[in-house]
Structure formats: structure tokens, C-alpha cells
Image (tube, rainbow, N blue to C red; front, side):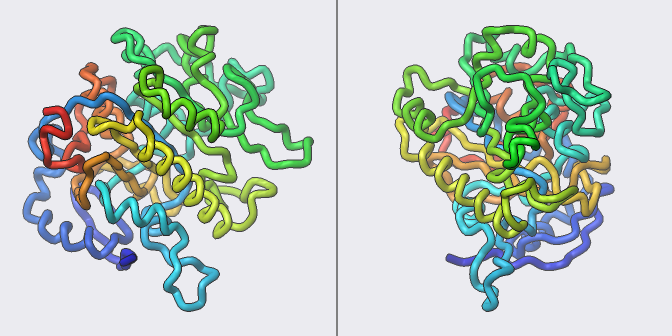
Length: 369
């Protein structure tokens, strides 16, 4: 399998600094220089028209930049031939890859909020929700803005949020298990944005849709497409999401940074492959694999605004072919694409985002045009 080679290429574009790019993306970038003024144009001027999606899976990884995940060499391999994340790199080579995708802020929480509500709400911390009975000295009061959950339920579209290592459905605690238990704190509320919104956290029926991720149960769900929700948000635990050394120590018991990258790649291989092989993954389905932010090495963002750094975003489709886009995108683009695909109005900052349709197959019949 051919690995991406990375090059240290500073590139200043519409207020955007990208420290390094895969070589394939660098070639595309040179072609894009003449179109610098167009890079932040309205969504439909640079991408294909919206398509109909019947099912979406969003898998959110953590705290590593583009060059730490796509084509990065395994530090334990002296030859430099082995990759830290071979399955992830394969997905990037085989399907749609956004080469200029950015987090919207540091640290994690505002990025997750942006993915489901189109805004960070001025939050620049990982503070617990005030709904958590074990929250710290400060907490985030319930947010009263609309989310994609409100939009989906308005259209009677089933949804679920699967949180690995959450103890029970509807759990509103800030973390699990607790540090004093002697093991790693695997579930973290800061990676579960749904619990920060009043209309979700105070609604028992909605809380039941926020459930533990269990691989066997998930496969059973996938094998029943008539009842499989159409919007599925998946958060691996902190040993499986590549959280790593970035911005703090590796959670106790997760191993080294190289270990967590391998564990994250293995999680993606199990989960993405299970989805792909299931009857729930149709010609009009998509799997979005995105990183929330980079390792705090930069505040680069989309379209001249500060953000959470340069990260990877991959779009896996049933009829996908290798495609890349060097158009600057962020988590607002992710939300905009899903909303467009479900025929929903765009929320907040998603309204002006460049959607990710250019990373989908060209075959209009396969995509639902």
C-alpha cells in the first residue's frame, strides 16, 4: 500500500497557515493558488449540488493533526516503512479526503458543539455540563440553542449517539469510571456534546438515545436496517479515540502516544468495516471520520479565522473513489453536508460553510441526485 509522504510546506492562503500536507494534496494546492479568492465562496459555487442521504455515521477521533494520522510512520519501526495508522491511511487513499479541514477551536468541547449545533457558544474549555451531578467548581449552563437533534426529530428521522464506555443509557455524569477506581477515565462528557443542551439533557426520551457503544450490539443494529437510526454519532473512549499525549497526559492505562494511535486505528478498522459490510450501509449512506482538533501545535482555522488546527476528515461511501479537496473546510462543513443530505435547514455557522459534496462519488444515481 502506498503511503502518503508529508512535506513541510508553509502555505499562506486567505489567512490560513497549513504547516504540512500530503504530497498528493500539495499538487492540488498548487492548482488552487490561482483561485485563492474563491476558496471561501458560498458552498454551491465550489462543490456539487446537495444529494440525498438516507443514513450518516459520524466517528469523532481526538487531538492529532493531519500529518500525525495520514501517512505518518510508526515511531517503533526503524525502517520507516510501517504506518502509525495504516487502516486510516488506506481510507484516506481510497475514499474522499479533505486536505484542508480544520477544527474550529481548542480544546475538545467547542469542536463537538460545532458538529451538532453549528456554534461554539463562546466556550473555550472542556468544562462539565451543569447537568452533571459531579461537575466541577464551574460548569456550562444548559445551552438553549437548536441542534441537529431538534431538526431530525422535526422530520421524524431516528438518531442515536453511541458513547464507548458510557455505563448506561442517558448517563449524565462527567466521566466514567472515576479516577479513584484505579483504571483510566474512559468516558468523558466533554466528548458528548448532546448533554450540554437543555432540550436534550432534560428530556428522558432523548437521553435514552445516548447509549453505550457496544461492538456486538452495534453489529446487531446494523443488520436490521429497518430499525437502524439514520443519524449515528459515535465517540470512542479515551483509549480508542487517539487522544494521546496532546494537551495533557495519556489517560492512565492507555499506553504511549504510539499505542493510542494503533488502538484508534484498530477501533476504526473494526467499526468502519462493520458498517461497510452491513445492509444498513446503502448507496446513499456516508461515514464521516473526523478529528476534533490537532495537538495544540497551531490555531490554524478555515477562511482566515483561528481554529483548532489542521486535521483529517474522510468521507467513506459505498461507491466511493479516491478524491481529494483542497477547499478549506471545518466542522461547520460537516454539519452543513449532513443537513443538506437530510433536507434540513442549516444551523448557525453551517449556513455559510462549504459542504463536502466534492468528496462524494461522481455517479449521481448512486448518490441520489
